[in-house]
Image (spheres, rainbow, N blue to C red):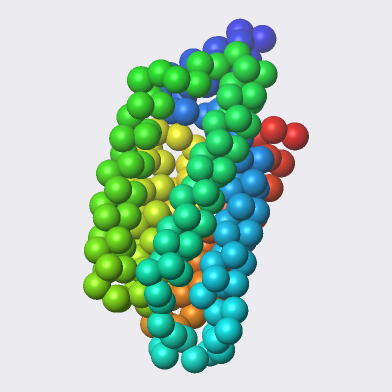
Length: 205
């Protein structure tokens, strides 16, 4: 009896330490909605760029200033919707589990997430302005994956696995430059949905 109580106490201490050092209230539903928004954004981007073109003839496609503006608008809208869904579902889960959403660990997570994201975003904008369109999609996947891996030490371990998959997919996409939109849809859409469903079932069901 005493031995079992000792084991239970150790488990409780381990749980408290984990909660104090990591943000564990991330919601799987946030990942699902982010994936859905990404797929919708990819469809709109495809319609904006390839409405009157052959997708397999990507290398002769020419983006006008109007098209680039449309793509940036779609990207910003997708990002805002994904962040909003993340804040909403994570806040709701934090309330259910009586956890603080905004604390020192959350700040550290966001800082470590933001540095690679901001670096990759600025680099992609520079390349886009120079006309290197094909490399943008692979780089967004790679830098997003690096951001997840960098921030994973402050949250659930599954975030690291998702980040590594995004990096691998981005590297693979650099070998097939003409199909960046497909890889982008898989990375930001399909992987997010699968990750979200797994997380929801594992931690919230």
